[in-house]
Length: 504
Image (cartoon, rainbow, N blue to C red; front, top):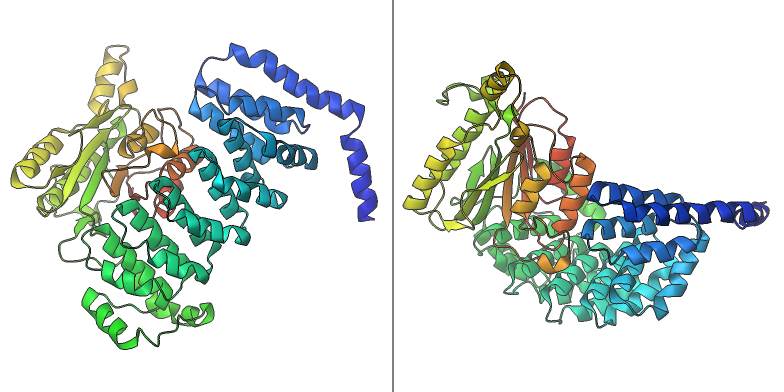
């Protein structure tokens, strides 16, 4: 019966009427697309091709992989990856071996992973040795998405490459494959001088749960900053134990290292309830750590991003948690400023930090991180003290009285603020921009995005996660006010951070 249905479906898909309809979708797009000049309408037009299921759509989408706008190119890649009809997938696989253009080849390889096209695994694996970096990165991501175990030896070889973006991506893929046989190679990368490579190795060690990385992870507990907390979390995930200080882990490893056997998943699960309280925290934090709105971090390279849109002028409803803390009033702005000031006052001199304020536009305090010495802390506190909501209640009242006024600057550009924080504003999501001065972001906002290139929260989460894939920044989010906060929680959880809801 199944064979009969499949034969009938194949006949229907190949019928002249349907082929003509599919060709018309592509033809209509080609006629209209040159008329679109703005990014949103160009992306919307590209997405109409997701209903085209004939192989002819591949040429059109492949041509867009090289579009001048990286977000349009990304949309084309997403559409091709979403088309899963056998004819299109077979045509993609047939084109890959002979494709000469590196950008086009990278997009085709990415589509194999997005479509979960298991038949394409050998083709992606073959591109791991391509001379072009973008193609190799696409191949690494695809073999990981396809859970291609046969690619593991090739991924291990990539750890010896000079390009750090490639090594980070390979470590991510090895973590996704979760094969303990990769443990020895991952352990060898845990002392790498590049902090993002080291962070990727820690994350991979946590996933593969092998014995070999345990000793190097224990050694990392003596590092300064966020890596120590990451290593602590990895040790807890591998062993199920919960020592809260480096010296305790060191003594434990000295006693048990030679004979230690990594617990099975079942054994680890049995210990999980006892660990529940400690796992809820972002790892044990040293005495010289930083705390902001109850979120603790040992990071020494921190960026604070604070919302100053017009709605921050509103009074909070849930005041009980904030009473007796010396606020001038109970507006969201005063609470945000007061808590940030307390955090800045407590920064240790070995911390480097910066602040971004944002509404429709992003307003940086400094161009980059500065040392938290007495001069910089004092100047930062004065700068924070002067922050006011842009287009707040008083500005709206004045605008109404005058019969107009432009309050556009008081809208909430969440995407712009986060891309500025990631140092990717205007660059798109290209992997070559992975380097970062910071390793931890605290992001506070009081409402849904209303301005910027992207205002749909799902789009923002997807794009920020993609931008941060190689950067490895931890993103903590703090929400205050009456709005749907799921996207703030998703931003934190999908970027290694903690979400705090300050209430209404």
